[in-house]
Amino acid sequence: MNFDGKKALEYVHGMTRLVGARFAGSPGEKKGAEYLLGLFKSFGYDEAHLQPFPIDYYEVWDEQLTVDGLGGVPCKGMIATVDCPEGVSGELVWVESGDACEIEGEVAGKIVMAYGAVGGARLKNLIAKKAAGLVLIETTPYVRPRRSGFGFEGSMRWGSLPGVRVTYEEGMKLMAFRGKKATIKVRSKYELAEANNVIAELKGSEYPDEIIVVCGHCDSIYDSEGTLDNAGGTAIVLELARIFRRIGSKRTLRFIAFSGEEQGLRGSIHYAKQLRKADKEAKKEDKQFTLKGKLTELEKHRLVINVDVQGALIGSNAAWITGPFDLGAAVRLLAAEQGPFFTVNEACYSSDNAPLADAGVPTISFGRGGPANFWGHTDEDVFELCSDEGLAVSGSFILKYLRRHVTEPRSFPFERTIPEEHKKHVSNYFRDRIMLRLDEGIED
Image (spheres, rainbow, N blue to C red):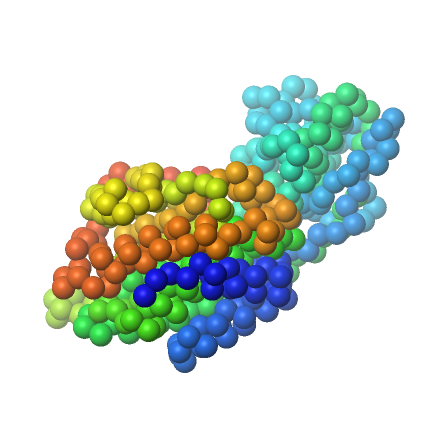
C-alpha cells in the first residue's frame, strides 16, 4: 500500500483552511484537536483520545510604535510582552543583539532596539538595566514581523518588557532615528489554559509491548496557519496511521499529534513526564520490579519517529538521530538504495523528539528543507506553500523505513540506547533552550 500525497494534502487543507491558526491553548487549537481526533476515528482508531495538559497562553493586540520625526511604524506586539495600555516612551538606542558586551552607557528608561531574539541572559540583562521597552528587528529581509523574540521560558523566569517587532526594512529606517523619542503601546493578556495532545494506537500483532511513537506537532505559532510547520508533518503522521490501520504492524504504533511545541515542547514534555513519573512509582512500589522481568510503559517505548516541517515541493531531506549508530545507517542505506537522498545528522533536533530522548528513548526526526521554509514561523506559512508531491517524498520514505526496520522485522534491529555524546546534545539543548522546563524538573 503506497503513501497517498493527495490524501495528506487534504489533511493539511483541513488543518489550515478549515481550522486555521492553532496556537496552543487557543480556541483554534481546540478545534484542531477535535478535527484530528475525528480523522483518527474515521480511520478505525475507536480508542483515539485527547491528552490534556496545562499551557501558558498569551494574547496580544493593539500594538503601536511611533518615533519623533518618523511617525507611526508598522509593527507587531510580541508574545509574552508586558501589557502597557498607556504606552512607554524613551530615547531610541541601538544595542545590537542585546548582549551585555554590546551595551554602551545607560539604557535605563530608554527604548532599546536589537536584532534577532533576546531570550535568556540577554532579556535578563535588559530587564536588570531597566530598559523601558524593546523594538526587535527581523532577521531576514522581506519577511513580515514575527511575534516571537522574548522566549517563553526566559520571560516566565525573569519577566518581560513592552516589546514590538518590525521588519528588517523598517529597522533600517529606524537606525537613522537613533536618539529620537520613541513610544511603544501594546495590549497583552496571559492566562493558564489547557491544550491537548491527540493520541491513536495500533496494537502490535506479535510484539505489543514494543511501542513505536510516530509523531508530529499539530500546533502553530500565534497567528499563522502553520502549514509547512507543521500541518505538513502532522498530515504525514495521519496518512501513516491510515495506512497501518489497514496493513497492520507486528509492533505497537502510537501515533501522536503533540501540541504546544511552538511554546517550548509543552505537549511532548507532558507526555514524557507522565511516563517517567509512572516508571519511578512502579519501581518504588516494587523493589523487585526489574528482577521480575517486568517493563514499565516508558521501558516499552523503543523508538520515536518525529516528523516536522514538511510539504515543500522544492527542497531537500534530512534526518536527525539521537540513538544508536544503526538508526542513521539504516536511513543512509535505504536512501542510497531507493532514494531520495538524505542528509543524516547525529544531533538533537529541536522538536518533540527531545523530551523522549531525554527520557532514554532513541529518536529519529525527519524534516524537509527548501526555499518555502523562508516563511516558517510567520503568518505567511500558508496552505499554498504545501504540495502533495512534497508530502509524498518524505511520507513514502518514512513508510518504507518503518516497514523494513520497525513494523515487520522478526526482532527489533535497533538497541534501546543513546550514546554519551548524544546525551550531551540533549542535555545542552534543554539547558540552553528550555530553561524553565529543566528548572521545574523534566523528571518531576
